[in-house]
Image (tube, rainbow, N blue to C red; front, top):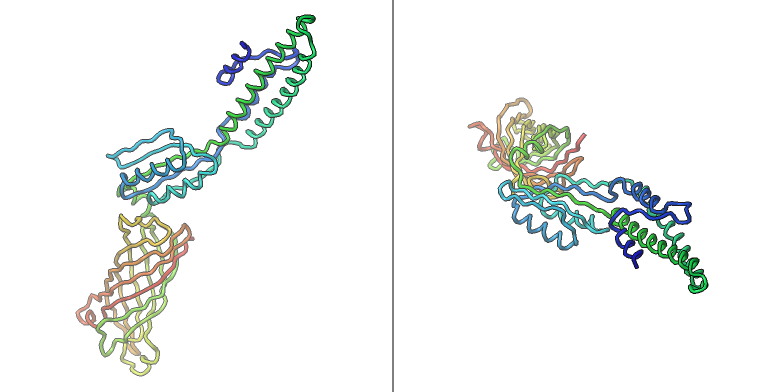
Length: 368
């Protein structure tokens, strides 16, 4: 029984075992194999950083995700002053993708990094070596038990005692190897999640979003002057080049809008063409994702620029301003698609009333 007790202690402590038959130190080989197999943790690691508009509600959602996934928490810190939540926890096998999907509902994900930690093939080889060793020892244990059953303890006490001691050593070794295989298996399933949820400060928004980008694109505009006049057509439409140069986003628009050709041909004094040049910028509301969602980002903003009005013989320049609101229907790392409504306000006493009106557009940009 003393040998069995030593075997139980061996699962938690690195104890030395005797050499069996004097030819091979199994205990030394077991620890060498384990050290080789677990030089670094093996498994998946998910790094998530999320912006939220309310840290208290986000904390409640994170707690629900942890309970639903059966996560084992290593650390959890909620700072109500700094408006941050930091957590580090382990999730069971097969749960890491589901956890990532659930945590995405907490707010706007701005960092999502899933990596494999360690060399899984090396750990697998280490486990395979231990399993082969375990199979060998169990075979030896079975042979020893058969031989022990054949011996008469009273007639051959020394041989019986020697064989009995060897059998007990094999029991300790097989138990010890099983413990190490289970420990290695647990290491290989170490799926770690590092989570940070915070309410963004203005400096974080500027650093993360108002930086230069290179995103050419275009849009199609439909402009309808509200009151019109004898020289203004009912509507103007046409394509425009739109170049986004900050992620915020700010952009340059250059387009040519034309009236119905039949109407322009019937009256040469009518404004038949408008060359539009403007600079614009958009602002995202704080409580609707702040422009970080993939689908349906609301925004508002303004444009400042000029309209060059042309008829058959003359042209005139009119400065304009246009407040607008819109929606990014889709936005990804390589582009965006949006819809926008603007109200053009000519900055001219002569042209303000006849030319002011609504403009609607649909556009897209691609990151280069």
